[in-house]
Length: 118
Image (cartoon, rainbow, N blue to C red):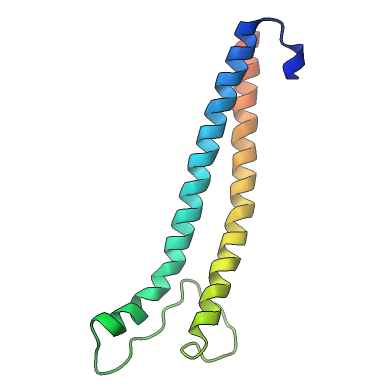
C-alpha cells in the first residue's frame, strides 16, 4: 500500500505510528548488535591489558574471540589479526542486522495495513 493511497488523516496517522515504531525497534536492535559484537571482539584485549596492569612472571596466552587460523605467530601479529577480526565481525553483523531490520519493518508495515483493514 502506498502512502498516496491513504484516504483520511487517521489512516496516515496509523501508518506513521507503525512506521515510527519499526524505526525505533530497528535502531535499538542495530545498536545492540553492533555494540555487543564489538565488545565480544574486545574480550581478546583482556590478556594484554592484564599483562600491563597485573603482570605475571610469564605472558598470558593470546585468546582470540573466534579461532581464526592466519598461519602467523598470534602474539607477534596480534594487532593485525585483532583489527581484521573487528572488521570481519562488523561486516558479518551488518548483513544479519540488515536482514533482521527489513523483516521487522515488513512486519510493522503488515500490522499497520491490517489495522487499517480491521
